[in-house]
Length: 356
Image 1 (tube, helix red, strand yellow):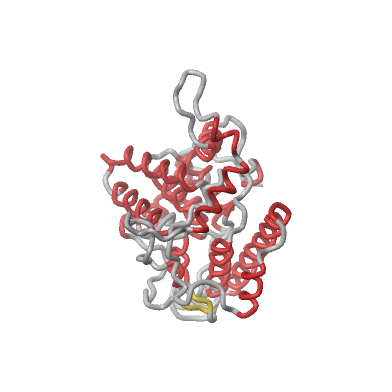
Image 2 (cartoon, rainbow, N blue to C red):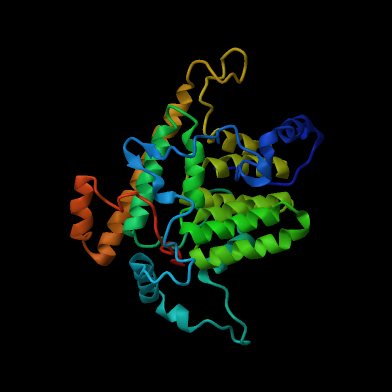
């Protein structure tokens, strides 16, 4: 059980806090591109390299064709249409009742969930202290995304290079339009005078794409941290980690949040769950880039890969119960290793995560 975050700022913590504040990764572990800082485990990599173990991650290219941004693009986005139809089927009553008694517009169920969580007076210390809404059904695009994510996680066993590719995947999970909106939020966050607008933009993204697109939550957690809203930031980190327990940015960020709250025990507990350094701590000199591999690194990767694979299997089971067996086209082509377009580029925006 995690220790409840508290707001003690005793002198005994001064050395601990000072050492942490001195770390350049403080700004920031949540998202390495913010304030132009890159976390120690978010090493840069060759942007031209998009393949691991034969699995193409070009699906997440930053400038796909036919993205839907061009109004003249008349291509029909089957996946987006299907996801919207499914959402309407499951949430028909909510779509009708979209106003409050006083005539003002209701917030989306995603924002309602977050607002209720952030304002709750209940003890929320760990991911087990609240329930998430049900995830969206597993589309073909989402299955491909999750498979690519698992392969990249496996790569962290041998190199830090794939951490930056995971950041790119997480940032682009809902297509080019969502990515551009996140870029707008990032640019606004650079200036304190535009923080209010930053929050508005991030909430709009969450409203449109749902909470299972975690990077807007990650940015919002960062913003709340910068505003010293530590409890709100802490709870957002918990949501991210309940959806993606392997999200090393949120794992590092929640440590900094605990430090900000003066919760040394909490910071220590979460620090033990972070992605371990590649090189063993007994290397010489300390923190050297080369040296014996840290055995804890493989343990962490194996654990998180197993969690991601089990999560995928569960969503597949739940989707099968709801919609029946997977379509025969996907199953036959998956067996041939021939799923997706020839280039592997996601050629349209994906709103399949906007389930709630």
